[in-house]
Length: 483
Image 1 (cartoon, rainbow, N blue to C red):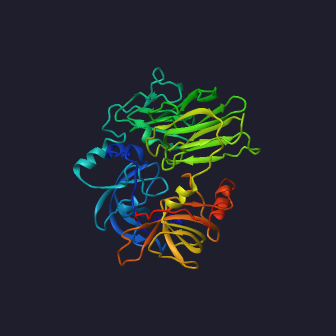
Image 2 (image 1 turned 90 degrees about the vertical axis):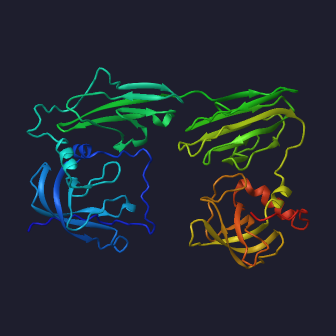
Image 3 (image 1 turned 30 degrees about the vertical axis):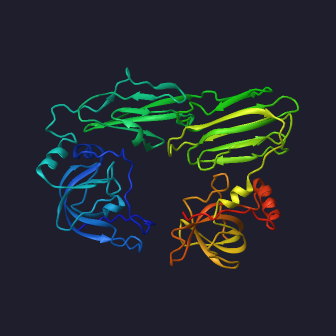
């Protein structure tokens, strides 16, 4: 008996097994799987062998089989062999049973092949056998011509304005059936392929690049490259605000969703001797996008404030210095994690003093405000902290200094302006947290993080100083209900 055993080294599988595939993942037919796979054969499973990796035992395995019929192969295959990788469906693998007959789709390195929806083996039936035989060239074909991409309709160069739709067609001549795959840098663009077309609904500058159309049929394959150039559109600009005048600035396409993967900057300048007053009437950013506000009179011109997401709005504020311009910079990322309308702000001149964050409102907006030191947590959506000093606490008084508590949070801990921040074990922070659940229950009260302040962050220095200053005379707050 001649055995070939192929193991995948270093495979690590997490504790929770979940097969998560993009909604657009194709479910190829047996004919298409035969076209795509270099090796296809019919075989009976003799036995299965689990991997020695302790994380994968019983979940991923090799199958030892006896070959009954070879449909296609680039080289000679032994009558019996062992190969992988098979496993439970939760790992996006195919499970095969001892003693059963299957049609296997295999890579040249003798690993189970998974194209599109994970299915590397199908049961032997008359319909499946007939379909597989139509997926490769044999004596049953009178003519079997390799595919040829139609160069008359294929556009090797496409230029599109940012935000517009991109469509590149890949029409083919040759023997049916065809399987078309669009890729970029070797990665299959599942979510952007529509049949034989490649489509981008709203193009960004990051979509500029070279794309490949590969078409396969039972006789062979053909590939053509198309270069897509996205032309950037201008946004932002210079805005002069005159005395007794109100100017409105909006994100692009407001109130419709603003563009992705773009940075827009506005420079807003007042008359001599005046300041600028901003009033944000709408503020709705995608989760990981941010708006930076810069006072040009700050020597280092770091962002005075940076707002992220949609939970915290800039509201109304006055600039730092007279006769000095301000900058508003909107940075949007690539992932369209949700639809957001952007922002709208009204700007006018004023001689009022600069405004600061409403510290009383911040203090009264959480059940617990405390200076803490963080420690390691075993749970992803939870942090452990030791209370160093309590600045404010609603009834019932459930924590005291030197006590350790756990605080739940979203996927990221956010600062007072809604932006993700790093929460390092062993570092000191000021946390603003709310009670969760029924505070009158006999069960222990749990905490949910509202936001945190890093005392070592330059943008938080003013808040930290003001918190220290009001410790002796804390604001009078109405007790808040639990979340």
